[in-house]
Amino acid sequence: MRLSAAILLFATSLLAATLPWTPANFRGLSLGRAQHSEVMRLLGSPDAASRTREGEELFYKARGNHHGDLTARLNRSGVVTEIQESFPVAIPRTNLYKEFGQDALTAHFSRAKCAANALYRDPRGSIELTLYPSRGIVLWPDQYGYDFAAILYVAQQPGLARAPACVNKR
Image (cartoon, rainbow, N blue to C red):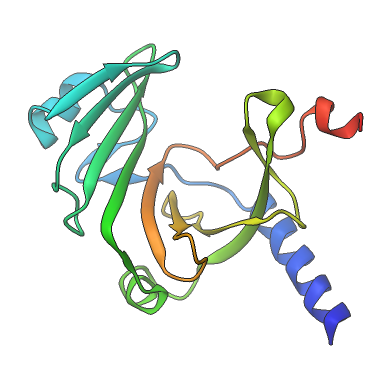
């Protein structure tokens, strides 16, 4: 039984890594193409903003589809790469499966401390994410690992396809 579960987990992780990823569309914003001006037009003025090494973050309080706080992340060129909605209260898996469908995939990841905490695919990783590759959606679990604490609408697959070189040197 344990072996079959391990094989299923490994196969699911490989399948998730090979499926084509479709960039998300959030309220008319095509992630990976939408610009700063489109964010302002469709989401309005942010409640706060900050500059990061990667670009800019725009914060919107309680304006998400689930009444959560939105964070729009733009790269240095002003292109939207991610929109995150952090839920005020974790949402049960069954609720989001009803909303998005049962075709979700589970993938495991680890963080590489030696590479600026880069997230990478790891079949034995402790970070379990639920992915909807055809919709560009990633569901992030809460601290207990069952309900969801956030939803990410992203332009590309989360994490690196394999561990950074510094992880393999150990």
